[in-house]
Length: 314
Ligand SMILES: [Mg+2]
Image (cartoon, rainbow, N blue to C red; front, side, top):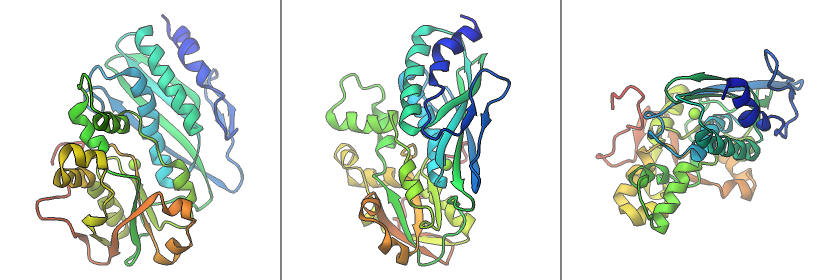
């Protein structure tokens, strides 16, 4: 199968799936064209996933299709951006329909679910590697940044933490239990908090998505904002399935240190927290407070800020 046939068969159907309607010209020309509405800014980010590094060798292609776009879209959620479109650079060892068919199906489902239209891409031959660039839009000046957290702000996280990290132990389960299936679902099919990010524009003083573990990613907010944090481990939204599978102490460790959950970690001034609609507040847990002294307090001594370090200095 040639490159053009591959694109026509597996990727062209993904064009034209956006809700935003900002894509003036999609795939098929030398470049795509995107209209940025006046008074808005373009927010964009690129993510590269390498087989054997960011996902296991031989990983299910349909899960990979969903997951790769979800992971990239999560960075838009962290900025409070409205998703618009994405490009895909795909390096494949061989163009096999057995792989491409389920991969494009997973990618297409994610594209529709997140409102991200395929704007273009590139395919090459080589070890399996995906690079996805996502585009989003925010009203000018409204993007959520890592800078801006101030002493006294509540520190909040969305959803529950630790399930995707726990799932790594069950990826090869032949007949997973109900709890194992629940944590595997969180690993295979993360859902970026796009609507929550948008709802927190003008509310969150700082934000990040949790890709490398709460302590590691919170650390980025603290460093960028020049502040510290006092955490309350009792308030940590530990996944109940993980507690049953791993016990309380390990579940808490995973909630603090494990990556791949793609929840949001945000700082919110108490006065604005009170004004948040109930439907937004119920998606968040207050897990601590921003303090002026640098560093993180409130966690047991055995737990050190680790998270996933791409160069392995952990
Ligand atoms: Mg991120």
